[in-house]
Image 1 (cartoon, rainbow, N blue to C red):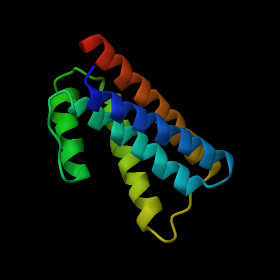
Image 2 (image 1 turned 135 degrees about the horizontal axis):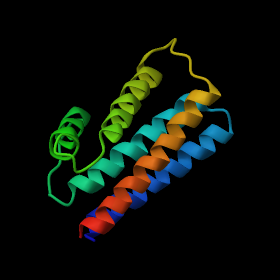
Image 3 (image 1 turned 30 degrees about the vertical axis):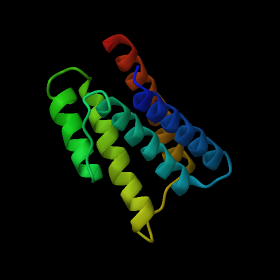
Length: 127
């Protein structure tokens, strides 16, 4: 596995750990944001194998859908997880009155863990 891929997977795991710590301390919006970044950084680890990168999150997300979801390489549910995480993170970060619950943050944390595990497994079996 390439050094950049490994670095991004470690970064994704670090963001997941931060999400867990924030969740445990009742910082649900920030936990959701870190969960999204764990997912996003996992996708960027995958893109490092191409190698390709984009200046904007939307470019990364679109490429992931086009090259991995629509081709069937990765299950469609992971595309939905990414899209939902992006939307919720935007709401948490930019909508002053967006309210989240402990359950919302926990769900995003669990999805981020699942996503990171899937990407890690995908990368290990693809090489």
